[in-house]
Image (cartoon, rainbow, N blue to C red; front, side):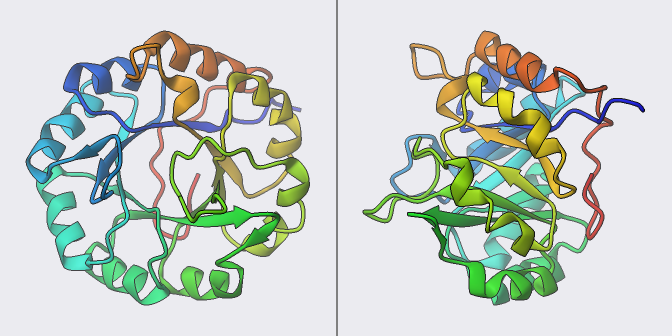
Length: 241
């Protein structure tokens, strides 16, 4: 029996072209924050195209527009200008916003974050609606008791995921304070047919707060153990790989 494909590795929150280019060489997806009000790594609209170009320059990773915004017309404009195909809706956008963005960008890869706090997923009643609206993948992340979402560093214990994953109905990426040590869970996660990869932030950062190629490479190696090289991330609507 051949080894399974390695999961996609997404590192999130690049703010400089040289930072984005460095980690793009050892990851599959690099998140670029736009419209994340108050976020430590939020970018002005004018900076997104250069960061996206820096990610693509390494010919491995794709840029991902990560946003809290709900405005599909604005997001479509920014994505087109930067030639970004992956868009991660990382707040509480309703299914209608996903449907409008899908209509505006029919070939985009739409990732909808869902948030788990104290074992409960706030979006669980709407998972089917998100799928019907055009979501390609879910990203399962943690929320904090004070309502913070996105790169909180809060861990998601496996027991909180067990009842949720069968209900997702779509492939998923896993976030929630993941570190290199969590790669030990890789075989169990890869046994789930919907598992597509992991999303990390703080574990990929150096002491200077920037995404670090050495730490990213260590995460890449850790999650690659026991797998074969994955194909380039060419996920299309309804058929993420």
